Image: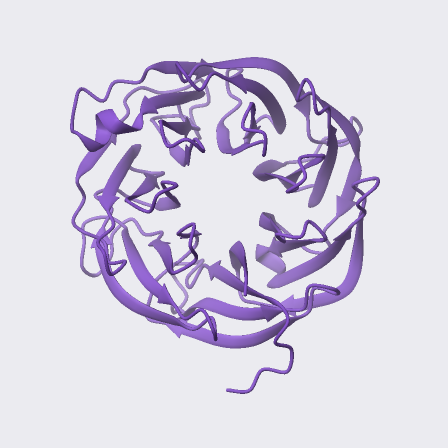
Length: 369
């Protein structure tokens, strides 16, 4: 395969292969593109078939391996969802399946990797559990080594009738795992080594969200002092300080992600900080916009900058390129990925005009070539 633009980045996109049980499943699930870092255009490299609902992806820090969940209540092989390991060819970006393992829970929706490539953490949304799988030398996954099961419920009977773990975020020092449970309105902090060594595994700290808020995704500031959490149900974003000695989170701010005059249905999805730590963005599904915030470098506090329509429906995850110049937004129900230029001075977002058609895109990951 001859690629016309060698000076770029690789982009990996996870999708839903079946959004309605009454419809046939689409075989193509994972998409690989080469990104033009100036205008955000995407050149097709590969389409991977045979993995059902590979909605969320994660790459090892060295970019050699990619892991994709199969967001299923029950797979063909397992009583629950699954997770697959792929090798990444550094020259071409091509993916090659290594193996798959069960996640021991229904609807796995998030996967993260510890900073030293030893373990994969998976969030089982419907199962209310987190499963930890060892990574072997060839990038393959061993059988699950530990499971954290949450119990209880929240105040929303439709969405919080039981635990719903939505993400796991490892701290940069690999000491703690921050587990966001949408169903229980809590962020649980576990000491990672306790889990790896199969010790008690009880949380060392629990950060409470507002009742009914539904914490979904977290991200660390590049200075590692602050953690930002987006809440799906309340459409808010919170700033916490993080204690690297104890794992404690202390909330210092909570802000809405929507305009005051918007009263329709909305669910937040994702949150990211620019590589320079100056700006934060949150995705809104319903209002279908990205909310932009400036970050105070000393306090971590946020100041609203504005809202940018994403030119599509049901904005899910989005990705910021390693250069901090571009933002790629996945519009699930519009089958599109839209590229935006990030203004380095103001944090403002401007469409580049590049729109790539991808069926039911959910998760976008970008790596440098």
